[in-house]
Image (cartoon, rainbow, N blue to C red):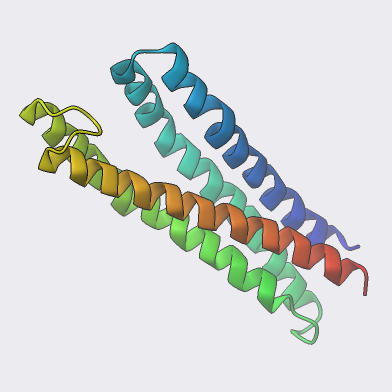
Length: 158
C-alpha cells in the first residue's frame, strides 16, 4: 500500500474516531453529569473545534487522494474515495458554517421565549428540528467515512 493511500485512510480513520468518541461518549456524558444548560454550553463550545478538526483531517485525506490521482495519471484513480471524502467535507462545512449558526439562533430564541427543550413551543420545535438535521448530517458523514475506509480496504486487496 502506498504512503498516500495510508495518509488518506489514517486521516479519515482519525476523523471517524473523533466523531464516534464525541457522539457516543462526550456529548451523552455531558448531559448526564451536568445540568442541561451547562451541558449545552459545553457542547456548543466544542462543536466549532469538532468541525474544524474534521475539515483539517478531510483536507489531509484529500491531499492523499489528489496525490494518488496525480501519481498514476488518473488511470486507477480512487474516484469513489474522492467522492465520499468530498461528501464528508461538504456536509461538515455546511454543518459548521450554516447549521451551527442556525442552531445557536434557535437556542437563543428558545431561551428568550422561556421555552424548555422538548416542549411544544415553536422555538423549541425549531431547535429540535435543527438538532435532528445536525444528528442526521453527522450520521451520514460517519457512514460515508466508514464506507470510504471499507472501499480503500477492498481496493488494497486488488
